[in-house]
Amino acid sequence: MIKINLLPTKRKKKAKPIPTFLLSTIAITVVVCVILAVLMQYFSSQVSEKQAEVSAKAKQIAELKEKIKAVEDYEKRNLIFKQRNEIIEQLSKNRAIPVKILNEVSELLPAGVWINSMAVSGSNINLACTAFTNTDVVNYVNNLKNSKLFADVFLQESVQAAGTGMTLYSFKLTFKVQA
Image (cartoon, rainbow, N blue to C red; front, side):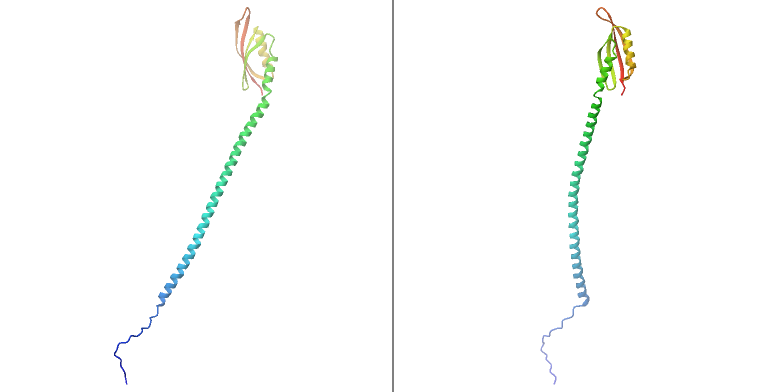
């Protein structure tokens, strides 16, 4: 006999299987997300390493700039020292020249001539002198011209001046010292 149950009964429906394309899509998405997370971590660590390296290099550059500045300051001080040393050496070499000039000028001075003033500027010398006779003036100029220490002796002026009861000659000379 055949029984028919007309009463509705609840039956459990069979679960439909999850489609494989959905499973594969989810799996690929998870794998891609994991790969992206790993790459993001890797690149962020690389960026932080590079930033640390840049800051270390910046500190090193600052230190090197300070050292460069110290070296430049040293070179400037050294140059100033060398210049001052050269000036001192030049002065010590030229120390005897004024004595030689005065000695030579006085040795060549004839008996009737005296020096009123003497100005030395570099290698140029200007003398203002007075003499009793014009012959004394000529003798002094010739003595200076014959000197090995002096060159370009030039009599600028010679003026006859009346002194106290006698005639005097005032004259000016210029010449150069030979080095």
